[in-house]
Image (cartoon, rainbow, N blue to C red):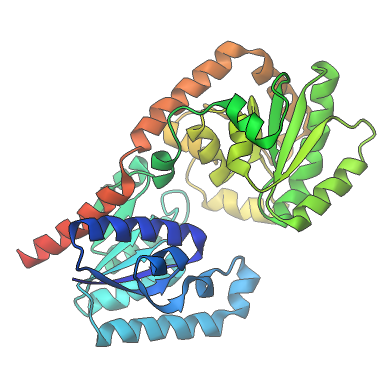
Length: 380
């Protein structure tokens, strides 16, 4: 069995390696080749190109690398047309993979896409292109599968690998001991984003909220995981500008461990919200875009919520403070409410547990079974 596979970035490498392992458990003779990260290569996947070639973030960066990316894309298409695999699997990286999938499908090669782009949230017209590109879509969330079924695209909900990796119960005291954080204080985790643009917009806002919390709840301490050295330097500089300085612990990386240690989490919307939910940590979400970007996004977006916990629950379980509502007063008031109201935080954590069970599907195995079933149907 020969399988073509393309993954970009570290998250794609993680998903793809889990899938490779699960397919090999059923078919030890399966051979994989494509664009591969270190974990995939370690499992025997032959790399035509390394995955970091696709790890380009941001519009300007993509445009500056356009010719190189297009050349790689064309080379991958030619390679698999000349050496047809039994199935081609594109893992995330939709701008790259959907074009590859469409071209290969037109040549009669079975195609699978693993991780849906956010087509359900905005630019829904893309679903037609996706339908022309893939024989099977594998989704991480159940509402995504519902969306594809409504548009007559073959789909399988496989669950989210993070829901398999993160235990149903985590111990804040253990996490605090590992991070050398106080056991006897109320602790708020602040995550101003993993990109510098986010940190510039949100770090000071969140620190000002922390000041207000300490004024009302003396003794509360804060911990901030820092994604990069540049973000650390920015947060340190913003902290020095504060007149009143709350106790803030700065930690390089380890954002999941930091959230596990906290009583409440204040974060920028993104994957961190999903992780905080799976850790059952009460949270609030805040985000700001430029006025122009927000005006564009607001017209395109089709969901009433921006954070994954609310989208998954289909209700406002988590308070979202966006744009003009993203003020230090609003953030502080909600933090204080969550730190004081045990009934509210217990209800939130229980809702998160329900969603965790829903997403915990043994995703890699389920995805492997769906791919193998597609091949079996083709043979049949």
